Image 1 (cartoon, helix red, strand yellow):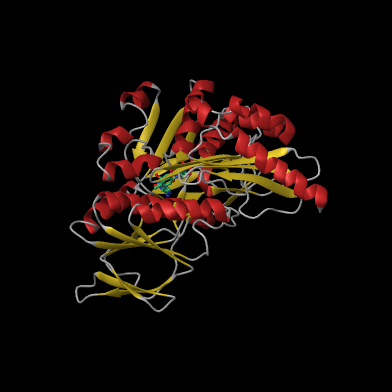
Image 2: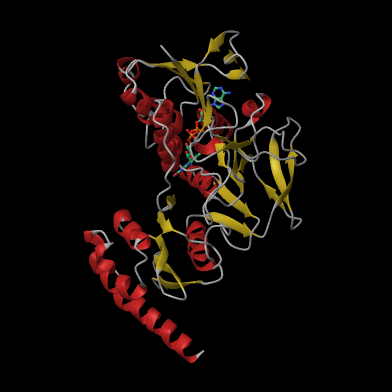
Length: 432
Ligand SMILES: Cc1cc2nc3c(=O)[nH]c(=O)nc-3n(C[C@H](O)[C@H](O)[C@H](O)COP(=O)(O)OP(=O)(O)OC[C@H]3O[C@@H](n4cnc5c(N)ncnc54)[C@H](O)[C@@H]3O)c2cc1C
């Protein structure tokens, strides 16, 4: 009987294991993870802190599922891989032999050097352990700083606000989430954050953490020379693929563990997938590292097939993303760059008072729709993907936009307004 070992019980690792089990009922499968005994929904960690979920609600499956499907879960840290004789060393002193190995080691939050960062009360949020630490670090405090303006930063801000803690967010760019959102959407989110009691300092970086006599954070210094008092600092300046173990084993890595389109690394019988993997040769416009829940699941399914002996190429669908910024829901489909590349334009509509907007990206030369950016407007994924795949034009899409909207929201769809923005675009371009 062949033995597959998977390092990481995140969405990627467990999807691979379940896929492999379906294909290969006899395979001996072991999933090792140091974080939790059972796989959890990382994306819902915040709701435990906010009191909306109990810890057991994070479990992705009932505990019996793993035994029933002969998937052996092992809680330990893998501290070494020896590819030559296919063995793993664990932190509990034991070793394990594998026939094939999947690295699904995920990410860690980005760490960098800054004076004072070792102060108590400074932390990121990625793991179950981080959540526990955040619980401890924020007990009874009044003021917090969140450094970084991405999705995890806004989650931390929301978590802290539910406890009545004053939050100051430091964002390096001129716009909130400026690498991902065009300025108009960024302004809507910024306004919303401010309404939720978050003080947003744009074009501002943290330069030093100041500690009190007990070594606990008491303030941060910013690039504008301000001192912002706080008893907690949330580090939210991005995540990085977790590659140290792979590097030490001699696997080729860059930002992530390098893989081909079959999620194979440069060493035989070793695969990598999910947040930790980096495609050697992504298609133009596609990211080399995909750090999302659904891409982890898709990569897990693909590599699970390959592990079962049915070598399968990773087929990326149309890119999508969704997130929540307090009450504002964000959805995107297709290519939605923050700055328009050459040959791409967009139509943008926003509600004058609500936090709602629609942006349709299109190619200038043939007006084929290439992406959707939506705030507090929910469009059906299947419909948007179909339009993007079929290269439907604005003339085709705009009158049919109602097909994409969820029924309940249909009457609120600003069709007239979008058509008028489109007509203005046509007039402007006919004149110019
Ligand atoms: C707070 C937060 C909110 C998020 N919200 C969203 C969202 O709304 N939508 C979205 O699409 N994505 C979201 N993400 C990102 C998403 O959760 C990740 O892309 C996804 O979970 C990655 O899955 P993975 O299985 O590749 O890795 P992970 O979930 O990181 O799992 C890897 C596991 O491997 C373990 N491991 C690593 N090295 C070792 C070792 N040497 N030995 C043993 N175990 C090891 C780790 O402890 C970890 O448990 C969020 C992430 C965070 C942190």
